[in-house]
Length: 99
Figure 1 (cartoon, rainbow, N blue to C red):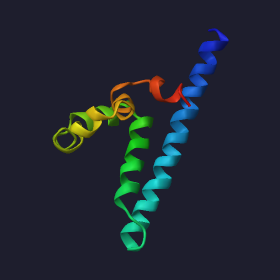
Figure 2: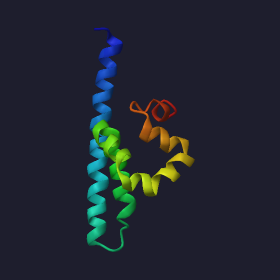
Figure 3: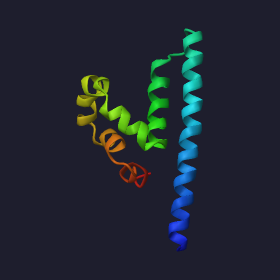
Figure 4: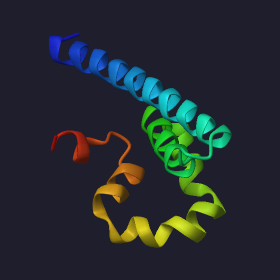
């Protein structure tokens, strides 16, 4: 094993852990928004599920294959190439290499 492969594997694991942490953070904010009417809950739920999709390929495939995604979000995702790259690219290279 080369050092490049090793560091790529470590980076992938750290990226998943950060995405899972951010998922739980925004999910908890959304739940607090359900209890307190001052905090909006829908944007926090959407952001949290995008982070969960970033951490899990299975969840991302599940989101893209649902009828709800195809009915409501497909047109929006098609108009915005960065969001489309987020859902369609399994490695997220397009987004995270630009940062």
